Image (cartoon, rainbow, N blue to C red; front, side, top):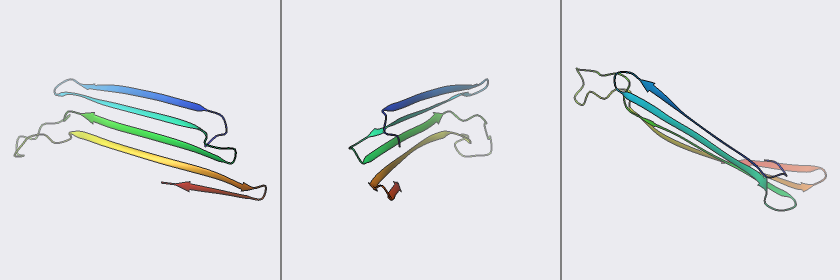
Length: 88
Protein backbone atom coordinates (compact mmCIF):
# COMPACT_ATOMS: atom_id res chain seq x y z
CA UNK A 1 0.00 0.00 0.00
CA UNK A 2 1.06 3.54 -0.64
CA UNK A 3 0.33 6.89 0.95
CA UNK A 4 -0.44 8.35 -2.50
CA UNK A 5 -3.47 7.36 -4.56
CA UNK A 6 -2.50 5.16 -7.49
CA UNK A 7 -4.09 2.57 -9.71
CA UNK A 8 -3.42 0.27 -12.62
CA UNK A 9 -5.57 -1.62 -15.10
CA UNK A 10 -4.41 -4.21 -17.63
CA UNK A 11 -6.08 -6.73 -19.88
CA UNK A 12 -5.48 -9.05 -22.75
CA UNK A 13 -6.90 -11.52 -25.21
CA UNK A 14 -5.28 -14.65 -26.63
CA UNK A 15 -6.82 -16.15 -29.73
CA UNK A 16 -6.54 -19.88 -30.37
CA UNK A 17 -7.24 -20.47 -34.03
CA UNK A 18 -9.35 -23.61 -33.71
CA UNK A 19 -11.63 -23.02 -30.76
CA UNK A 20 -11.78 -19.45 -29.50
CA UNK A 21 -9.80 -17.33 -27.12
CA UNK A 22 -9.11 -16.36 -23.54
CA UNK A 23 -9.78 -12.95 -21.94
CA UNK A 24 -7.82 -11.80 -18.89
CA UNK A 25 -7.82 -8.65 -16.81
CA UNK A 26 -6.42 -7.15 -13.66
CA UNK A 27 -7.06 -3.94 -11.70
CA UNK A 28 -5.30 -2.50 -8.65
CA UNK A 29 -6.06 0.54 -6.52
CA UNK A 30 -3.91 1.75 -3.64
CA UNK A 31 -3.85 4.72 -1.33
CA UNK A 32 -4.34 6.16 2.12
CA UNK A 33 -7.43 5.27 4.17
CA UNK A 34 -6.41 7.57 7.03
CA UNK A 35 -3.27 9.31 8.25
CA UNK A 36 -1.80 6.04 9.57
CA UNK A 37 -3.57 3.39 7.47
CA UNK A 38 -3.06 2.60 3.79
CA UNK A 39 -4.70 -0.08 1.66
CA UNK A 40 -4.39 -1.86 -1.64
CA UNK A 41 -6.98 -3.97 -3.48
CA UNK A 42 -6.24 -6.10 -6.53
CA UNK A 43 -8.75 -8.13 -8.53
CA UNK A 44 -7.97 -10.39 -11.48
CA UNK A 45 -9.89 -12.70 -13.73
CA UNK A 46 -9.50 -15.02 -16.69
CA UNK A 47 -12.25 -16.47 -18.83
CA UNK A 48 -12.23 -18.31 -22.10
CA UNK A 49 -13.04 -21.22 -24.31
CA UNK A 50 -11.21 -24.49 -24.32
CA UNK A 51 -8.06 -24.43 -26.41
CA UNK A 52 -8.03 -28.19 -27.00
CA UNK A 53 -10.74 -30.67 -27.84
CA UNK A 54 -10.72 -34.13 -26.29
CA UNK A 55 -12.92 -36.40 -28.37
CA UNK A 56 -12.79 -39.05 -25.60
CA UNK A 57 -14.23 -36.77 -22.90
CA UNK A 58 -17.96 -36.67 -22.29
CA UNK A 59 -18.27 -32.92 -22.90
CA UNK A 60 -15.12 -32.44 -25.02
CA UNK A 61 -14.22 -29.14 -23.31
CA UNK A 62 -10.78 -29.70 -21.80
CA UNK A 63 -8.91 -26.52 -20.94
CA UNK A 64 -11.86 -24.16 -20.46
CA UNK A 65 -10.90 -21.32 -18.10
CA UNK A 66 -13.08 -19.33 -15.68
CA UNK A 67 -11.08 -17.92 -12.74
CA UNK A 68 -11.41 -14.96 -10.37
CA UNK A 69 -9.06 -13.82 -7.60
CA UNK A 70 -8.87 -10.89 -5.18
CA UNK A 71 -6.24 -9.74 -2.72
CA UNK A 72 -6.43 -6.99 -0.11
CA UNK A 73 -3.60 -5.57 1.92
CA UNK A 74 -3.69 -3.08 4.81
CA UNK A 75 -0.70 -1.32 6.28
CA UNK A 76 -0.99 0.17 9.79
CA UNK A 77 1.63 2.73 10.81
CA UNK A 78 0.98 2.38 14.55
CA UNK A 79 3.91 4.50 15.73
CA UNK A 80 7.34 5.66 14.60
CA UNK A 81 8.71 2.27 15.68
CA UNK A 82 5.90 -0.15 14.77
CA UNK A 83 4.37 -0.96 11.37
CA UNK A 84 1.90 -3.83 10.83
CA UNK A 85 0.88 -5.31 7.45
CA UNK A 86 -2.17 -7.55 6.97
CA UNK A 87 -2.84 -9.45 3.73
CA UNK A 88 -6.15 -11.17 2.96
